Length: 235
Image (cartoon, rainbow, N blue to C red; front, side, top):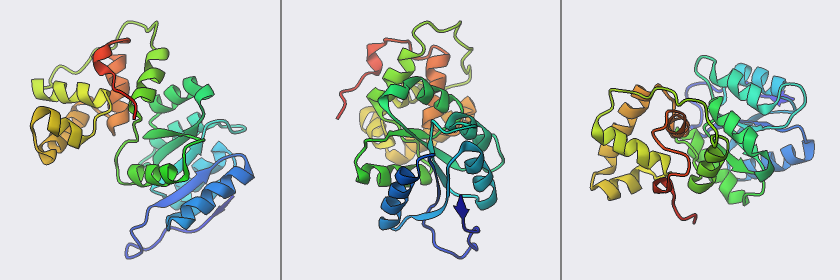
């Protein structure tokens, strides 16, 4: 495990990243890729415990988190980090055969997930997206994951009662994976107006980002399992 101290306020605005993966070779490859893109990797960890300790010490913007690690796994580490004061954003690395773990990671507060076989430029873009405060939401993949593990859900949780019709409409479009720009085009609203609606919506839902808003949409029954209105063609 290595780390460098937090920068002074006057330092570069490049996002600070901690990479957590129990395979040293994989970890080294990810770090090399991020550094080649001029991203600031401030530390690396081989276990969930190390990732949590390092993140608390260094205050990174993003933790790139593997799921399967010895001891505390990536899900437990994600929950520990997102429950802390001023938490980092957590981007989970996964594979298709870890679907159940992905859903649990989203419930634990992850800001998104990326498949380990994603192209290098996709990884760089994903880190930048999450560091900028956005959620990384792959529409059809995320929907399939959530639907698969809510096929026989318990009684839906009560949903918010103070959403306006417009906020509800935008919430359902977020659950489809649409961006603010796409929602604006669909509803004939400016991107700034959509962003303002989304900000109020996330506050009313008491969630930190769009991924969590999607999870709540399924858990409350706002979006029903198998509801084809929430499907899109994967690009």
